[in-house]
Each structure stands twice: as structure tokens, then as C-alpha cells.
Image (cartoon, rainbow, N blue to C red; front, side, top):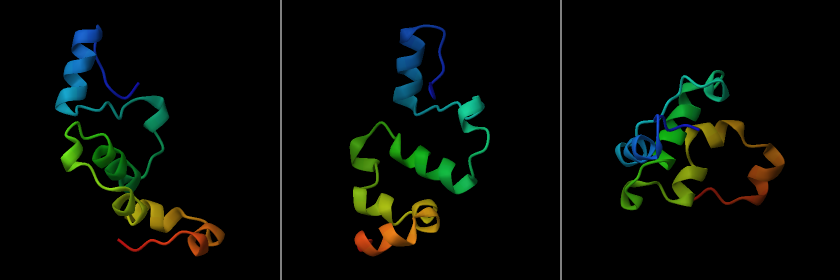
Length: 77
């Protein structure tokens, strides 16, 4: 779980504050741009989260998307 806490209250507090634990094994090999996208997507305030189009245009998505998919997905915002 990306949000730390010893009990449900602490976990919820971490969620509300957007405190993500990137020290977990699942995050060990992530690139800085992948971490950036995850941080942006997991923002608690929905108005501050990127739109789907903004996510599709994020540097990590753009640099990792398969060329076959890229032709099928419109990446314009």
C-alpha cells in the first residue's frame, strides 16, 4: 500500500496529506517520471489531479507508450 500508517486513522491521514511511501519494494525500480505521474494522480483534491488527457501527455506515458497504441490514441489535450 503506498500510504503508510499503523492503523486506519494514520493511513487515512496519509491519504489526506498525500504522503506516499515510495520506499516500498513495488516502487523500487520506478523512474523519476513514473513517480511524478503517480504523485500527480494520487492527489487527494480532485480539482488538482490531472485530467485523463493530461495523464496521456505526461512524459512517462509518452516515452513508454507502444508505437501501435500511440497511433490509436489521440494525445491532444
